[in-house]
Length: 198
Image (cartoon, rainbow, N blue to C red):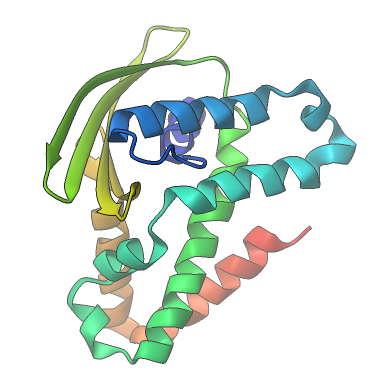
């Protein structure tokens, strides 16, 4: 499960994409940059932990279209909250993604990434890939991207057929239906404090 978590983060993390590049080229280029950060011997030293985390979070932050992912993760509930609440939720959601995955990617151990297929339909694209571990276990990963100007940004990732956004939406909807939106915000704030604590 640790390897799977590591792979999930590895495929999610994108750094600065090339202008006008295809979705696959952007993914490949930026994932290589993240692997470089993780493999950097100097950054692996304990006293450089904060520097390493900052570099990883910077790359992770450029991966996600936080607004689109937050909106999709809320589903119909998105329309029920005010613009101010939407901004607050988006910020909390971004912190959840960036911090929870930053820890996992640091356990990357030279797994192989194979890019299989790219499909572009207008403003949307899909990049299909597989992760092969040292033990030859394989995981399918599909990036779903949305074009924003000259850039492609990820709004969902499907791991072994399971949508990351759909998974969050299911969890969030359950909390909102049973205890209300304020409870969801409360839990996300608590999680943020846990994730950002030294």
